[in-house]
Image 1: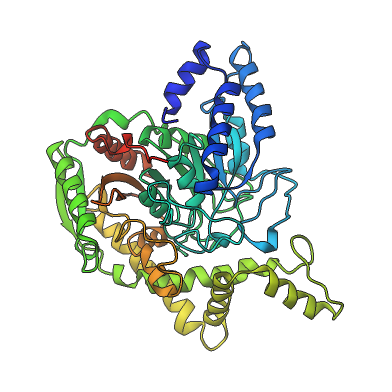
Image 2 (image 1 turned 120 degrees about the horizontal axis):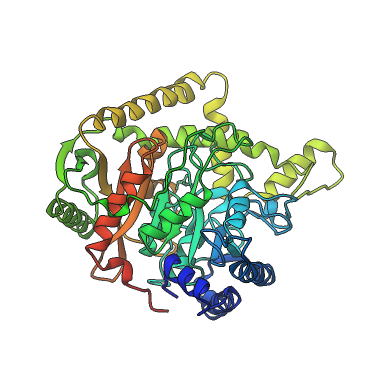
Length: 484
Ligand code: GLN
């Protein structure tokens, strides 16, 4: 279960394999490993076979193009609305919610011919870095079942690493694609904010949320990004920009490419094995012709506090809609409207979600708004400017994705702040809205994957992907498979 999209499309078009066979193989694999991995909240086996039948019919039909993902099994984070299929956000408040429409990402996947095999586990409302905040499933890291897969898109990362789907979709608000990709030894790409539509993607922090692909290879990530990106009238923040063919420039190399190394990211507390792997990766790119430039992103130091003010403020507002009135859980003990609101939210939300709602409400409340929310918005502008300044002297920025490899289940649940620090290297690029990828760049002595982060200019996913592909083609980390 390690074949790439290209290899599979070739087999499908030549008739060596049908999508029904391929999909059945993946559904069998899900049955075989799910008890140990726990990546899915819902497996949509029947729907998958039906889409595979359509894909097979299209392969042989002269009028219907199979599409860039024609017949390929894909998993989707359970934050994307799927018409007629339960969408929970890993929360009790949406445990039985069946949306009447598809999110734009899902519509585009279907248009591209993808076969959706199921909905993947995550931290409740995407709040977390380990997937332990899910109210509905426990996901384990395929490389070590006693460790977390990362989060919040932990199910999406684990499913690809465990061979339960070819590629998957996650969302990243402050690191939730890149950090789990690093933990699970695969590729995860957060596009530029606005590159992919947020319509039908349940909102956590609307000014930061962005959807993107998980894959085994950079080329597969580029193909999936091409399929889901693009302007959407239904999302006012989606960018009206042309979508290039992200695969076209993958092989252009890194000769003369300027790689910025920000001194603020190589700090005390970073795992020495992680630092060594990242430094070796930089040397490798240098040997391929890249030029290394020392840079500074001076406000990096403020990114954790800024993020946890902006994101919680937006979350407290976004999550006001879950009140038991129109959809989702309702707990009504006959005590009137206010009681119904309170009892529903008390029963429906988990501890981390409640913590964020309280923090967010606090930083937006009158008297504190200026000191916290307004100040954080101003610092966010400074963080954005840091990147704009840096990109005057470099083309991409390279850092570790996370300070440590995947940690043990339960290790960080008692102390929210230590959990928040797992995202210390991914938050600033989220606040700046720029694209960033994580790719595998080594393994620790304990055989845990290490992630390399490559951050690009606004809308320049192509250079990020090209740099990542050049590195990947010169190494063999991406060919390693977790033994289950
Ligand atoms: N781990 C971060 C948080 O808990 C980021 C989550 C995300 O990107 N969705 O908010």
